[in-house]
Every structure is written in structure tokens, then in C-alpha cells.
Image 1: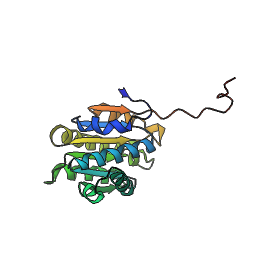
Image 2: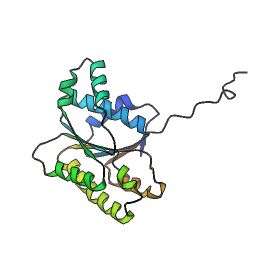
Image 3: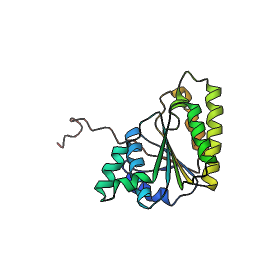
Image 4: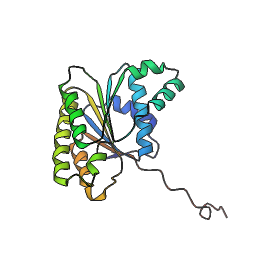
Length: 194
């Protein structure tokens, strides 16, 4: 497993662009949001088409616009390269991924943001969650092998009893990257020089 120092986000977009297959990234939600925003703007600026499945989350289109403006890019041109679909349940996630697999529209990149969020739901039977996740990951693997680069973001588990789902994603991915969280702030007494 490749592990980056606490702030690798600036160079990640370049690494993603040169990698084929499925990449899974495990990091804090804040780091994942920054990483995705930078990667999307970078890819869109290169006229790459990106499909995004935003799972159990809102999609930060304002962040995309801000970053595009900071980089002196046309925000509308950047947003035109990105197609976003929202999914709230495990079945909507599976359906969104399946639609990408059967769509005639071609994307060079597929981002599945916070893939495991609905799979951690305690109301979903563990066997059902694992069955649907397996089918979803199989389809993503097929897409990554033949049609597009795939990025799966994996925030920390909300339900520790289902951490095996993270391990399942890790095993399936061609590349699994864990970005460690920044160190805790030093307490004032520890920072004394003398």
C-alpha cells in the first residue's frame, strides 16, 4: 500500500492521470474533497470527460468553480466536462455504475465519491451489502480494465463492524492509496522551547 505524507493532494491529480485501472483512495473527508476538486479541474482542463457518482453527499460544484477561477480557467468549460449523478442507496450506486457500463456515452474517467457510505448503513443486512458491493466492484473493475480510469474515494468507516467492506475495496483496486490524517496539534506545554 502506498502512503503519502499529510499533504500530497497537489501532485495526486498528475499521478491519477498517468494511472490506468481502478484507484481507491482512503482519507479523511476534507482531504478527499480537496483531492477530488483538484483532480476534476485538472482533468476537465485537459478536455477529459468525467462521470461522477456522488454517493450520499452533495457535489461541491462551487469548489470546482472557485478552483477553476483561481487557475484562470473558464468555469463553464470545466463544468461541461463533468457529469454528476447522485446516489443515496446501495441499489442506486449499483444502478449508476451499471448505467455507465452500458452507456454509449464514453467517459475517460469515472469518480465514485464516498462509495461505501450507504453500505455502512446498519439497516442493510451485511450479506446484502456485501453482495451488492461485490457486483458494483466487479462492474467498476471491468470499466477500469477496458474503458476508463476509475477513482473510488473511501472515507473512514462510520460503522466499524463493517470495516471488512474497506478491505474488499482495497483487494479489488489496482492501486490503493491511504492518505494519513494530519498529526494532532501539539499541546502548548509540549511546544515549550526551554
